[in-house]
Image (cartoon, rainbow, N blue to C red; front, side, top):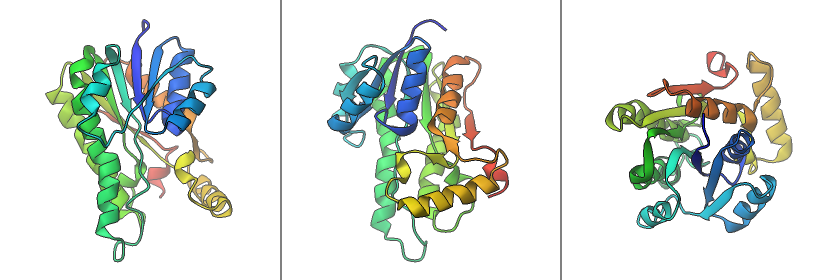
Length: 238
């Protein structure tokens, strides 16, 4: 695959940042986007200054078209937008918390895809990042599962509607990323150990694992309408 321009929204940390590093290492031009200038500056340092960066709030629907218009033409766009909202027992979780999760995850994915669409090459692709919560029945995750399922549901519809632009998605399992930073370290490590024991490959995921899945979807021009689950087999045992 020749040198291409890839935009990663949510590229300042975690899966998005590791995807940027991998794609840069394979010779592509990468622009990372995120809300926090401080985090973008750190991310640029991690990439050795090889990436470009743009400050962008994926939930600011009105501002997004101008943000994408200022970028170079886009060959591929990765939407690595996460949210920790919507987690908690179904009987007591506030509806406002579930709504916030949809704002940060579902609506942000939709708004970014709509705004960027005029600037994406017809030979290019759009990749959504969902999550394994949509495929497992884990108590306390109904809100976040619904949001991730909504993102996954976009993929086959848009693959047909937006053709010839390819549309795919990745559904990560339990992956050690900053998404977990709100969890006390001792509790987090116990959870990681528990999930590692359940997972057929014997470990939890790394951001690099998911980055490799995203890179595959970018490079394989016969892939469209597919949600690629990258979970080490956890969905079969959880």
